[in-house]
Structures are given as structure tokens and as C-alpha cells.
Length: 124
Length: 180
Image (cartoon, rainbow over all chains, first blue to last red; front, top):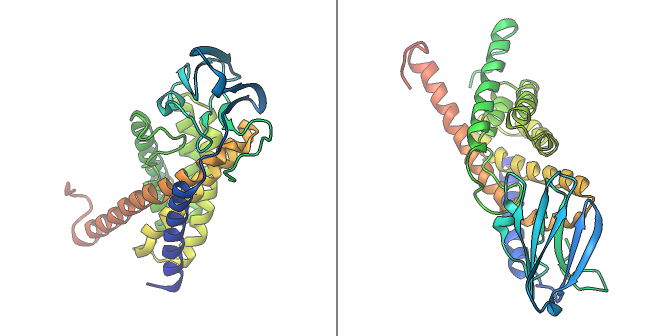
């Protein structure tokens, strides 16, 4: 193998290992506040630790359809979406700050943050 | 691999054929349900054609095939928003491959593909961050890096086997026969 081929192979292995390590080792985050962002603006913040009864709310997005969000104690999910791909629905409940729910066609983001301080433990 | 710099009608026909093949693969793959519930993760089988074109026909012809396929793919699938994501990812991946095609031989093409796929996913995420006006989407970056390496390796190997086959056909037998 030539030098550049070896370099590329090494870079790929490094990328794989780095990503895997990041996913396995990252902190979960202490947050309990779900922040719902639509088209770059925060529309709602829900303290999940204080939810007594599960409830749903519907949000109309700029994509021309609505997402139905189910809120439960300690977790949140998109239970219904008008988009064709349904990726946000398949993702299911989230309860920590590691992976946000993102609905690209409707420009909706649901992430769990530490609340008032705002900054999440996971940088990146 | 012979790099015939064909001009005129021959070149146009070849570009059109490859675009049609890429578009067909793209549309067929779009019918499959998402493999994993993460935005932007897919096999990207149509890029077998892109990788092949960059290394065998050269980056310029590959760019023409790629941009035609991305545009027609968005039109045919009826989701014009995908145009932005595909273009952002596709152009970045193409640029990376154009550079790599000078560094690597055709035999090492399978190595160029995963790196291009990683940059494809990165470009897609950057576009997504712009559309969503939020850097939150970068939380998916590690997932997309891993998937890029895996899917890129797959499409790269497909292209590699394809080139070996095509070479054997054009060398061994009359390309006009119905073999393969």
C-alpha cells in the first residue's frame, strides 16, 4: 500500500474508534428539562421531573404538518408526525441529553437540557 | 483500467447511461424503509456510480452525473428539501474524492469511498444545522461518522468489484455478447 493509502486507512480507523469511544464514554447529562425548538426558536420548556399525568401536545411546524408530542414523567417522545419518513416517531422516548429528537422536515428539535444553566454536559 | 477520453456522442451516451443507472438505484433505495432511526443514515447505493465515475471517467464527468442524479432524484421523489441535503453532502464528498483520485490508484478506490461518505454525512449535517438554525443536530455526528465508514466501505467495495468485472468483460470477451 502506498503512503497516502495507509494514511487514509489510519484516519478511518481513528474516526471509527473516536466516534465509538465518544458514544460510549460521554456523560448522560443531569438534565430533566425538555426544550422544544421550532425553526430555531424555543417554543416550550417542560420540566419532565414534575409531570404527573402523561399528556400530549401538538405542534404545527413550518414544514406544513404537525407533530404530536407525548410527555411523561422523566421522558418525552414524538408519538405522531405528518412527515413521510417517521424517523422521529421511530426514535421513541428520550430521557437524557445524549441524543435529541430531530424532525428535519418540520424543523423541530426536542432536547433534554440541564434547565436554567442551559449548557449541556455533552459538548459537541 | 483504461481511461478512454471519449468525446462527442459517445461521452454523452455514457454520461446519460450512468446517470440513469444512478437514478434508478437511488429511487429503488428510497423505497426501502430506514435502516436505523437516525436522520441521514442510509446505504447510498447510488454512490457506487459516483465512485466509479470519479475514478474511471474523471472528476469532471462524475460531477455532471452526480448533480443530474441529485436534481432528478429530488424531483422524482417529490421532496425538494432533500435537494439541499444531498447537494451539501454530495458536493463535499465529490471534492474529497476528486482530491483522493489523484493520490490513490483505481485499485485503492474502496479506501476513498468511506472517507468520501464521512464527508458526505458531515456536509449533510452542516446543511441541517443551517436549516434548523441550531447546532443541536451535531449530536448525531458520531453516529453519522460510523455509518459513513461502514456504508462507504460497502459502496466502495461494490464499485471495486464492478470495475474488476467490467475489465474482465472488455478484456476477455466481446462486450457485445450477453455474458454477465
